[in-house]
Image (cartoon, rainbow, N blue to C red):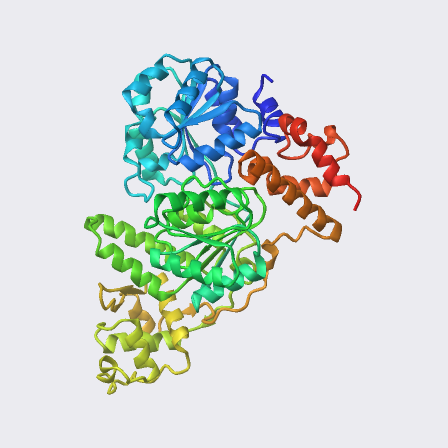
Length: 596
């Protein structure tokens, strides 16, 4: 095997490169440096794994997480690739054995943490070896503004000084222009070729719902569409993680918590169980996610509003890495917006940085309340223009906008007459004519008291969210979070500008069902599916690797659809390379064609 295409097909089992993969591989094979920004599931690993097999020497891969490097090495080993890792979970004897194997030239890829790589002794050891390349995965860790910031990453520029002739590639799934500049500066990749792939994830289906008993909404989503399938539920706080996890477990869902307050050993155990088993739902804060290499996550649910489009894109992108349909589901309410603004304004960030974070919150709110394609709205934030996806809730059920000019005028007038001193809850009480509380009873004399009874409390909160999303209203400082009028409100109050809004009550949309595994059409196919999954789980447990390291779901699906008759036909199934044909070919053929 002397070409990249040969390795792609015979080792990894794929028939063709995707996107920029081939150009990146060729650039690196020829000794060039590269910065690769490619969405989760876009195939970043192949961009350095194939050059590692084509070039002489050992490829050193910088990886920030022990679990990530262990699972990637397990996957490569299943493919017949000589790979290993060096990390703190190993005994000194195990580490010495890996080092000896490197000296003997028996390994092609070695995964290391940045802390180890930066040790002078280890750098000197590498200088004694023939090196194929350096791959710096999760390169966005150089950015001090991200929650994945790792200060050691900022020191990796020393590789350019110690190994000036060894090609380097930095890879990440999410990096705006500022983060890309940070990567290039700190890793000394200013002259590297930039490969910026499309951020589009056409297999993801986006849906946003109004928060109304979020736990019940989440449970209905899982029970109705994703039973016994893997998913991630993101929450805004540790307490929320514990609460949601306990609730799901009580309802019979296999759910595990993950947040920074849990013991390290428990976090590792839960992450390994999620990565290796089918049907686990991980309930987590943003502490969970970097480097999650599990391809068969069928849904990512946010039960609280993410702080920025970048965070949302990165987190939701952990669904559907295998290319099969997957769901990004976001449940949010007005209180989420207030909570995030409070956290930003009370933080130690500089005023300029606080404004940047508040602008990101505004962009996130605009995504939630858009009337147009959500895929378009999200990618526009990254400067990319795409056609409507045809799969999100707005595309499948375009919202029937209604003329909300009169209700909006009532709200704006109420804000004006209360001198913009009150928060959303108090303003809504005044509009509904509720005088139970002292701070609303004092306003009973207003002409706007009780004039808004055509809408419910939820309806008024939906109006306020949409006006905030459009910038017509702003939130004042904590703790009251008073609603403030923008200058544009004047023309609305004068009747010079109509206001059209989304429906104020969400419907029980049916379109979500199409994200499920609807390709299983017959009883025989269902039996084959369950048979192959049981076999895969047994093999994975015997080999102590994740189930997806044996075969992806999409591979099992293709096996069932095509029913190959022999080893030659097996080689044409996606994800079945030569080593797997040799190792599992006869077992697969027996399973596919055994008597019913």
